[in-house]
Length: 224
Image (tube, rainbow, N blue to C red; front, side, top):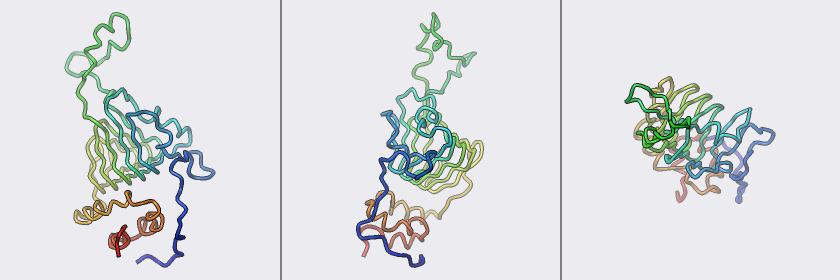
């Protein structure tokens, strides 16, 4: 059990998810949801990005070759370290001919062959679950699915899916281990604490961060 601490007030003070800079005195940390403008990017509440240069430019500096129509979907409560980048399907080049160079984008008479670079095979949307932690300098390739509660080590290049509560690392990233046993992962997914009402979640932040799965089950909404 967790050590006794003062109870959260009956009417908890909930951090504002619409404030771009949630950490006082730390302009390098931004919540992404208030900043995203593209309809092809979805970011859940409280997911943040940390960058000492210009974190507010995440949409243009960190989501690359996003010419559509594939989406980037990032869940709630995700932590993105400096330099995390998502490569989208627009980065693809033809590989079935003698050259991979995209001549039509240069204009002139070359542009008459634009059909050669449209409709290239893609892997679909890139989807990140809830409560995912990305280390510094991670690169995520197109069409990857990263599960809830996963961790991606610094400097990794993610080319394949990462399971729920998996820890992946390397180039290309490989599954190192899972954070919990398969039965416990199922219990955590059933609890889905990221979907709890914010006032209830606020009262039980200590349990979410440092409690056991049993502790979490004991305080789920509607529990006795």
